[in-house]
Amino acid sequence: MKKILMIALGAGLFLSACSKDFLELDSSRFISKDRIDEISATSPHLSIATLNGLYAYNVKTFSGGTTRHDDFGQKGYDIYSDMLAGDMNLNSAIYGWYRDIANLTATANYANLTNYGPWRFYYYMVRGTNNVIASSGGNDVIPEDNTEKAVVAEAKALRAYMYYNLMNLYTKGYDANEKILPVYTEPVLVNLPAKNTKEVFDLMVKDLTESISLFEASGITSGKNVNLNVAKSFLAYVYAARGTAQDLAEAKRLSAEVMAEYPLATKQQLLGGFNARTSNPNWIWSATLGVENDLDLVSWWGQVDIFTYSYASVGDTKGMPKELYEAIPDEDVRKEQFTNQPITDSKGAVRNFGVNAYLPVGKFYAPARVHQGQRLITTDYLFLRVEEMYLLNAEVSARLGQDGEAINTLTELMNIRLDDVSYLSGLGGQALKDEIALQTRIELWGEGKVYAAVKRNKGTVTYGSNHLYFKNTTFSYDDSKLTLAVPQAEILNNPVYNN
Image (cartoon, rainbow, N blue to C red; front, side, top):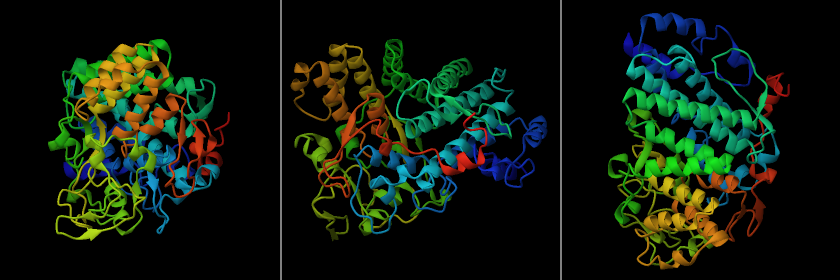
């Protein structure tokens, strides 16, 4: 019975912010709030089951409500953001997945499902976190049980993370008065109007601050999913995005605290495949995947890795801009993460994907390194690693005018990648900020983090000379082409959206 309950909760505790069929009071697809209250009275493990369901949903195929092969949870939208930022090239559009992102037609058409999938997914996840919090007493209740404290801490951190992703994808940056996102903090069965950006940020800061306090009070601060250091990292990102001097100081403090808890990747680990948590102690949050997840072609690996049975393996490759690749010094170990040369797999088969491809075959690969060798996905998903906090710490230090501290942090990171980093000591001001931005692009390629960095720093992006559609074209961070549109389903099915 307990197993059946866990499966039911994992599959069904979600509602959307749009589309009226998600709001049916007695829908057989969801567990109603009244039913949650009934189960809570007899099952103290309801919130844990719901939370486990959220983590499963985060890697689930078609969780954005479509049958598209780019619809597989957070890692799918990481690809969206990397393509919008211009750092992940779609090298061919034989099968059409990501074509509308790469040619920037999706963002101009609110009816395009590219806009709908992330919106639906993130609001489903918000609904799930609201159910966890409600089943543990509500937003203002601090559970007595330490395990329950940690569960609520996870849920609040996850809720903030979902709004953070919505904010990045659907807004042009921090405009305090812009109204884009409805805010749901209760598992209500009604639509709500869009709130201004300031209110969304206030909620994220409140959720993450409370999450950190709950983790610390519970004594349960580690774990393979969202934990204390994940919550601190999320809050550092939120502060950096809002960007006041006090926010930047807080982002610096929090990122430094996380940096102290994890080792940096070694040179060997930087070339180790980024495919298993067990061999990457620098990973802060990831998903351990196995055959039970039933992932194959419709997955991050099924889109990007040529050593997986994937779209990339048959020609729809995703690679680095030529100019970004050329900006990596030859002696930098990360140069070996990418190549535009013919690839020989572990069985001696040679594959040539073209000189303009610059594929990540030394960064992301199924361990056997056999062309199309991985059919069922058993390589892990990476969501957060400590190197991000080093780069963020350097960034916010530079934004605060603390160039010396920014250089020290960046030097610690780069010492592993380059034998001679003396050039860093001569940088300052905008040149230092530009260097940090460049290292962020190189280091975090394919990890879904550069798009947010461009927006919070009000930067520009220039698509590479090997881009499929916009060769050598520069876009400002606030160009509407680089921001998803609020989907048609929300506009049509939420009558109070503009109230």
